[in-house]
Every structure is written in C-alpha cells, then in structure tokens.
Length: 234
Image (cartoon, one colour):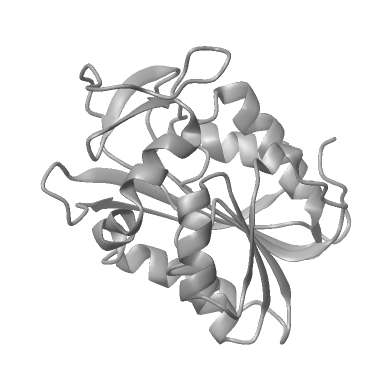
C-alpha cells in the first residue's frame, strides 16, 4: 500500500486486531484510515515525479503491478490514465473498495502479496510505494527478490520507503497501532542491488503529511531497472 509515516512510539489505544505473532494486522490500520490516508499524502510532489519518471520509460500498454495499491491514487490512477494495464494488490478490503470505485480503469485484488501467484518476467514494471514498512526485514528482502524476478528483463521497479534503522518497533501511525521495520537508505539500496536490480536514480526528501498528528518524515525513492543480461537473485 502507499503507506509511510512518522513512527511515533506510544501505546496504542483500544482493541488491536493481531495475527498469530501478536502484531497488529497490516490491514487494520488502513481499514480504519480509508480515504484519510490519501488526503494526508496527496501533496507528495516527489511521488508524482517518481511516477513521471516511470511513465517516461514505459512502452504503450505496459503491464504494471502496484504492490500495496491503497486507494488507487495517485499510482494506479496515473498509470491507468496513461493507457497502461494496472493490477493493484492490497491487503485492506476498505482500500480495495475505494480503489475499485475511484480508478475503474485498473484492476484491484484484495490479497496478501505473499499469497498472490506471480510468474517470472510477467510485468513491465512494479511499483512498491511505502508498502514494505509493516513487513519484517526478512520478509522485505524476500519480497524485493521475488518482485525483481517478476519484472521482465529491461523493465523497471520503483520503490519508496521511510529510511529508518528500525526493526519490529511498535508505533502509532495517524492514530493507528502498527508494527514497523525499515532499513537505512544505504542498506535498502544494497538490498535492491543484491536482488539483481540496477538503481538508476534515487531521491531523498522530507515530507510533512496533511494530518494533525503528522511530523516531517524522510522519504526515499529508488528507481531501478532489471538488466537485460542478468537474472535476478533467486
């Protein structure tokens, strides 16, 4: 999902839906936030520039996977409006319902990305905007490797995150309890390259979401390509 946030460390209030490892379920916070999330992050010019970067490298009618597609805006909406075949996957049923209604030109599926069957070399591009943060570090490494294989040789993967050196931290995001893991920018770049991707450009910025509880937060955008002559790390 297009998710990020200042990870304010405070005790969560009210009931929390958890999984078998007693961590907040990834869908719970974003089911509760719904369209409020989109409003808070709609002003990210860096995100828009990242999409323009990708659009400039896609052939007409390209097939694009949006991992953690959220409300469908701005990623799926921008890509679909340019004529691309977009599949959005998100674990939150509320977000998928919003995206389906707001971006009818794209296809959205409610699922955990780990459970979705994805063939190697099946997408021209993959977008991973702020959707890694509720995965632990091992899951993040494994998912980036898997998505690198999904991208066709010569295709692109764009990835954005909040580059922090944190692992399994209980936090509050826009008033909702979450469990957060992340990497420093240098470590994330290394992880991406180890997966067999070439980092063509990166942009670091500071962004303040339009929300009463928000604080300025670091964002890192990596713009990557799968080389034509090498296979991603399995």
